[in-house]
Length: 188
Image (tube, rainbow, N blue to C red; front, side, top):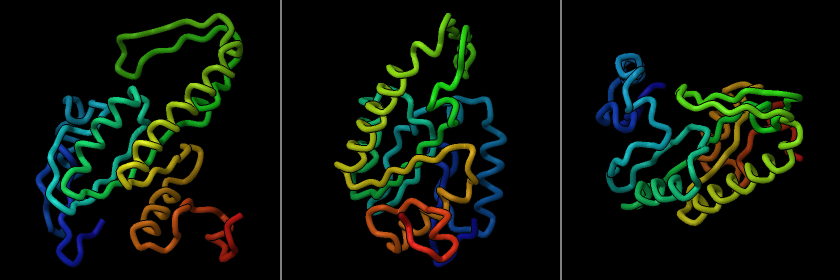
């Protein structure tokens, strides 16, 4: 990332806003230095008040309770803060593409759950995940923020290109990047 034209960038809760050519290096250093702290491990964005007319880019799985996510982004949206959310999920996580007995563990390590026939849970799981995503999308829409889903089996450049297009106003309401657009064609 290169800071141009006086933009100030920061990692919420980790770095102060800075307009420096070394912003990327400083943010990487802050992430490395705080790798095991709550500032990095916390799944919700920090409860930080942003300056008026700022923009926030949130990247995560957003699997916390939808009410908690909505409450946090509503607080962030005060002072005319614009926001963009990118939900990142693994396709297997989203599809629950497992069979038979499966042990699930929380990423933080403390919780575990065993399902005897995980395939019997698939339909209800996918329904609840879709409802959850819909609630978060609606919360983002109500405050004028954008929401995009990215799957980890796709290149990381795709959501970044989509975000750039959205920030430049080049793609209208549906700013999802597609292979057809990259090849010079039109999106389906």
